[in-house]
Image (cartoon, protein in one colour):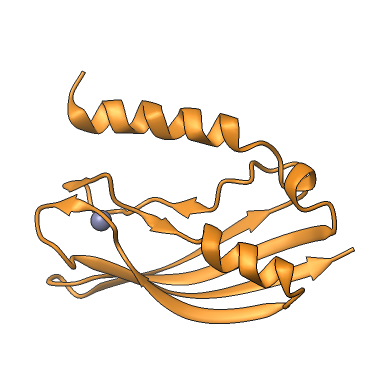
Amino acid sequence: MNKKNASRTERLQQRVLAGFVSTHFPEVKSIVISMVYNQSGIGKSLPRTVNFSPDSSAFFRIDCLNKDCVDGGFDLSQVLNSMIRDRREVAKGQLSCEGNGASADHSDIVYKVAIKYA
Ligand SMILES: [Zn+2]
């Protein structure tokens, strides 16, 4: 098993262990993360939308799309946790990929989060 597969397995495990959105945040009805994924160098921009419902896993990590990226991704847990704590409905920001690999700083996302509360 190479490093990439190992970290993928580990990530699947994290997803299972994360539990459900409803368990952690019973007051949340839905979460929508809209983002534009930018891969630097090749100038590729890709819109992505990820939806979470109460029965989704409470695992708010978006994978990096760079195939050479190792252990990369964008962790929105902090953002979502503090939004839900303050019952904020909308937030915007930017995150860089946490991965190592081909090149540092190879991709980032510009995101917008919208949360609906019950
Ligand atoms: Zn990456």
